[in-house]
Amino acid sequence: MNRDTINEIAKNTMSYRKSHLHREKGFIYYHCQRVANISLSLRRELFPDEDSMDDIIYAAAMLHDVTKGIEPHQETGAVLVKSLLKDECSPEQLEFISDIIALHNVRNHEELPFYIKLVQDADMLDHFGSMNIWTKFLGSAHSEESVWETLRFWDSGEHKQFLVKARSQLNYSRSKDIFDQKLKFEQQFHERFKLECNGEVDFS
Ligand SMILES: [Fe+2]
Ligand SMILES: [Fe+2]
Image 1 (cartoon, rainbow, N blue to C red):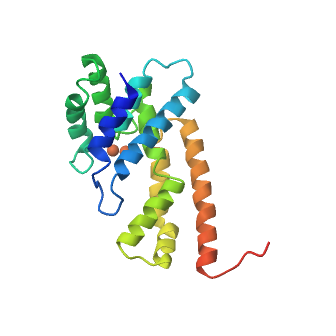
Image 2 (cartoon, rainbow, N blue to C red):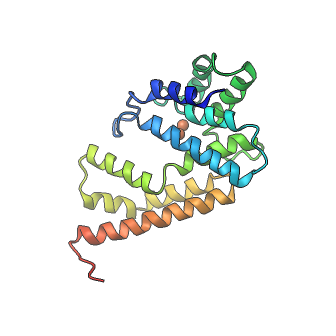
Image 3 (cartoon, protein in one colour):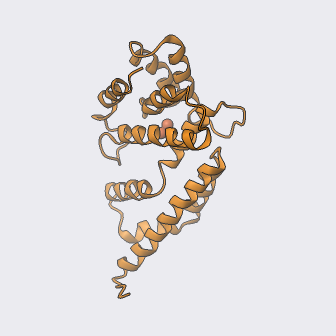
């Protein structure tokens, strides 16, 4: 399996497409690239001697959202990937890749193999930290929200509940640590944003 070719296929199928009205064209391709990188970093950190599935993890992560918008995308994607990668992967590799895509958002199942859980955690983690600020600002621009509405949203119980739920869906405690670190950054950003939205100046 050639990772450059997989990347090319992912780019051709996703980078020109708009998967969400309120996000930039190609968002899903860049998201998949990040999820592939996060998945492999987590694999090296949590299972340092287990590199036999790396190509499969890479390919599945690169295409896990290929049919985003054609729901249920985990099912449509699991089917489409078999034809998209048929010249690049063996039938056995295609089965693994298809399974990962089919289960990438079926969370809180203890018995799943590590290579599925890694992609699940990477997929979740990519939505937080600076990326969460980027997507919120894109959404705010799309719906013409003021900075105050954005600040109210970040302060809302609904948003806090969403964060608690997202954290609870992570499989590994190391992933929860990364999540907490990302949230800490977001919190610092929110505080700074609030201060500057009020025209306050930090003279320190
Ligand atoms: Fe997805
Ligand atoms: Fe995703």
